[in-house]
Length: 388
Length: 163
Image 1: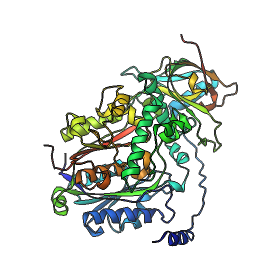
Image 2 (image 1 turned 90 degrees about the vertical axis):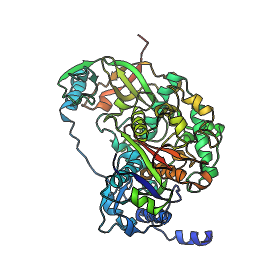
Image 3 (image 1 turned 90 degrees about the horizontal axis):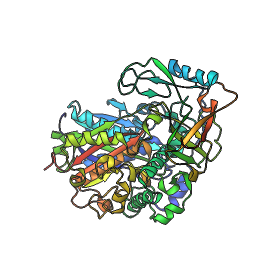
Image 4 (image 1 turned 45 degrees about the vertical axis):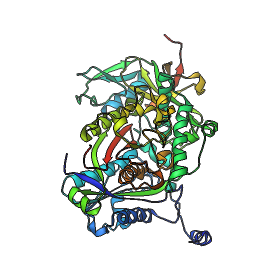
């Protein structure tokens, strides 16, 4: 791998369903200001910027031009990265690549979205192949629902299993995370009595659409040590894309791209027993079903073992491997920012700065991204430059 | 800032509506053109075989995604197949190709046709989730009037007895 690199600053907006007092630049500026303040830096210290949102969501093509006012990018190198649902995690990876390459010392990564400005599903379906798949897709919900129906039929998983994940994440957001969009505790009964939106997924199984922005600052080793005595070191990254047609990618229980990206990231980080070695995970779970069906893909349990794993309680805040102390995607989904929030939240955990949602003593954190044609990004962060 | 003051200020904020209506004309390309023509003229579903791994893909495409070898051999596959995954969509969904709302509920299914190694996405006639399972057998129902459109030349897939 390149030069040793760490996260030194994290900032995010207080996410909501609609933030009418901001346009996109104003939204970005809040997250960037908070990230700079958290690191004790000014915009003059930033050597390069990576920025991303979802194609079509705000009907703005050149986001790298349009968003410059949000981060005072005048005469700085600015690169747009947009990879669908993984936009935020890809922006984070690109920020890491910039700093790890040694070409830039301090790099600002920004993900943002104002979902309230458009019809999210109308925008998102444009990623589907137009002549073969677009008509039937049913939006992001359709793909996830189809995958879980296959998982249920193969392994006997239930809608209630997926509801447990939704309850965990929504309650964490409500109890611990002041930045989260949905902050209401719910019960399995609440989830199961909410209407189907796409069988087998019900309204409360599914993530919302949110307005919000997130900014994360990466720095090369020397600079990182000067900026803070406890940065979040990037130990490993993995990224895996799959297919053009959803039909090629979807009908396999589990998530092969997450399996591959995790394996690559674990290898890079030196992780051999993920369940034991990882202290906390911030996972891109857009629906409760994903929190059941994808656990095996990260090596947390055996194939088909998702329901048992979730029911055991090990992923709750007081469990052995807390998942989504922030409330995750089911509580907050400003899509272009969502993957970067996972990285930012994982960084806060190993920096000891996660406040009420802090997992005590967390040293190793995992963050994931999910999007497009069922593809995945994985990031592993650590309070130390290497594993013990 | 007091909530009262916030309210007074936000009432002065504007948001402006806009509709972007952009026409497109997609090139189907060589492989999908053959596929659509066969649907229209012969009610036949065409796949393509990878010369290296021998996998058959529907719809036909220029290379095998795993071998990166150009495919050349078109092979017809069956109009019967197995449901691999499905969802019954009940949330409002605008048909992105027509701009019209789709009739609800509709069943989106991933179907592995007999003779194919990949799945195609299409809709099922059945919309009651209690009567649909992964592993269920289905058969394509073709429209009488066909125009070379994957979405409408195959009307839907109907449930058939196992066998």
